[in-house]
Length: 111
Image 1 (cartoon, rainbow, N blue to C red):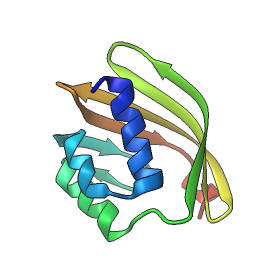
Image 2 (spheres, rainbow, N blue to C red; image 1 turned 60 degrees about the vertical axis):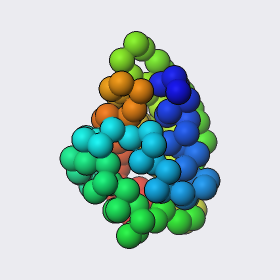
Image 3 (cartoon, rainbow, N blue to C red; image 1 turned 90 degrees about the horizontal axis):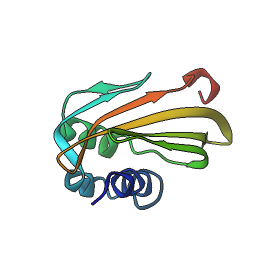
């Protein structure tokens, strides 16, 4: 899968299918995830956190998509329980898998 397909597949799983076990096919086992509410250093830890506390009543509206040879950046309007914030999310890749995800947003806007 190309990098853009991996990032889009991740968004589809997170927001639509909620089939978090299938993330194992697109995430590097040493996934480095860093966001304002959660950080982890493995795909297993990340997937288990999603299964333990799945995102509910969430949606997104894409604003911008940027690509370069090493990463993809999404800027989107994230809505949870009718409250919204702007999110910047970057994906980095290693040998056909997502190896790093960074999220930047103000959690107070959706709390």
